[in-house]
Every structure is written in C-alpha cells, then in structure tokens.
Length: 309
Ligand SMILES: O=c1ccn([C@@H]2O[C@H](COP(=O)(O)OP(=O)(O)O[C@H]3OC[C@@H](O)[C@H](O)[C@H]3O)[C@@H](O)[C@H]2O)c(=O)[nH]1
Image 1 (cartoon, protein in one colour):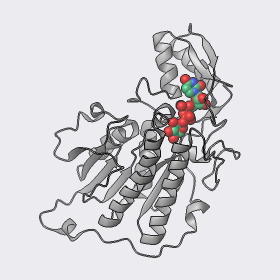
Image 2: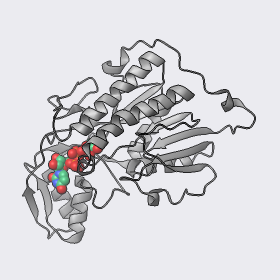
Image 3: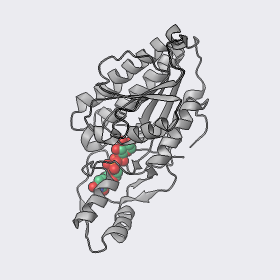
C-alpha cells in the first residue's frame, strides 16, 4: 500500500459533510453502525460481508442485482437479525439510512464486463452517482472499489497512485477502465463540491475462494483447467505480468482504508510480480504436472505489466 497520493492530496474541500439524519440519534434507532455493501453477493463483496458481520456492532445491508454475484455466497447470513439482502441494481436510486457505503458493485472479470459494455459503464457512472447521492443525503462515508485498470497499459512500472495512466478511451476494455476513471472523478467532485467523505481503493488482481469456476480470470481459469486435465491457455505473449492478492488481504485493506484518514486513491495489491507463463508453470507443477501449456490468442489492449508501487 502506498502513501498519500498527489492526485488526491491537493484538493480543497468547500463544505463540511452533511450531518446524519436526526433519526440516527432517536431512541428508536439502534446504536449499531449501518453499512451498505453494493455488490455484496459477489466475490470480494461477500468476503467483506463476512468480516463486517464478525463485529456485533455492525448491521450489514447488501444490495446486489446477482448478475455475477450469488445468494449462495451469503447463505450463512440470510435470516440473521443484523443482515439484510436487497435485490437492487445500482443504476437505480436507493434511499436508505446508512453510515458507511462500500460501493463494490460492478462485474470485474473482463469476460463479464465486456459482455454488456453499455450496462458496465452505466453501473460505473450512474451507479456511482446514485451512491454518491445517497452518501450526500444521509451523510455517509463512501468507499469506491476502483481498479488497477485505471492505469491502462501502463508506461510507468510499478504503478504509483500519482501516475495518470495510459488508457484507450474507445477500446473494448474502456467500459470498465474509463468507467472506473469517471467514477473516481465523480467521487472527488462530490468530495470537493459537497464535502462528502470519500475513500478510493485501486484493486489489483485478486483471487481466492468464491471466484466462479467459469469466471474467466487467469487464476481460476488455470486451476479449473488443471483440475479437469485440460491444457492451460496462456494468452500471448505470456510475458505479460500481474501481481496477485489473496482476497482476505484485500478485504483487510478495504476496511483499513474505510476507517482510516486517507481518502486515497490508494493501490491495494501484492508486490509479487509474475508472468502468465510463470503462473501457468506453477499451477501445472502444483495441480497437474502432466497437462500441457498452450499459447492462445490474446484480447485487445491487454496490459503488458502491472504491479502496485
Ligand atoms: O485463460 C487465461 C486468462 C487470462 N490470461 C491472461 O492473464 C492476465 C490476467 O487476466 P485476467 O482476466 O485474470 O485479469 P486482468 O488483469 O485482465 O483484469 C483484472 O485486473 C484488475 C481487476 O480490477 C479487474 O477487475 C480484473 O479483471 C492477462 O494478461 C490475460 O491475457 C491468460 O493468459 N489465460
């Protein structure tokens, strides 16, 4: 994790954050922290729910449209008195009294975010506007899970938070990387103009339990292929690099960012950097030494290197 970035550090706040609704202090109201997690039925979101539910002072509300998330990920909490699950798409407004918003909702695997690109950009732009509107109305602190993809195909390596990126505005990944860039812009404009308390995390590649087996991302793909005895498909050239963060470390980082004083943007990821060929060799060795490693065609604009500074 890096220190205060020059991107976010030199802003002027024009207004104090609005005070929470008086209902928050009424005798009918419980004293718990109310936390909304958009996308809380997804991979990272559901692990965040698990951690937040460990604290008996927290009430957790999940809003999810179940496009890539699943109720299965939350089944141990359904019916719990401190837990609520709402089928809700963040592109529609949501008005509820909360103190914290973890705005995690968005398909994150390239195959899923490219599946309906117009919907992906609506989720990032309209979804973030709706959540900022809610944060403004109820005085909640809001954390956006942005992405290392805001650096595009980075010309600076490793990536520091003050690097502005090298992003194709009209490519097939743009619905996601440009969508998240606009989402970050909206966060800072609401912060400067309305005094909303914001936090921005730039998430690097994350893996762990509850990734869908058909998620399409490289770690789950290679492991699923090895378990089935199929060849591991390394997309050309295979020298492209990524850093992989285990999901529990990611969740730790998100919670520390939310409760700390740093607005971000802040990179959250692991410093270890691997080529995709190295990753395939490691999975082959650990899971199925007899499988082949195949080089297959890549998709456009695949970043050639990525690692948090
Ligand atoms: O079967 C595969 C899948 C992927 N790959 C390669 O593995 C690398 C990683 O690809 P992934 O699809 O796992 O993930 P990407 O790095 O493209 O995007 C990821 O980045 C950061 C997050 O914020 C995004 O949400 C996430 O999807 C790419 O270079 C890709 O070409 C393979 O070699 N074989």
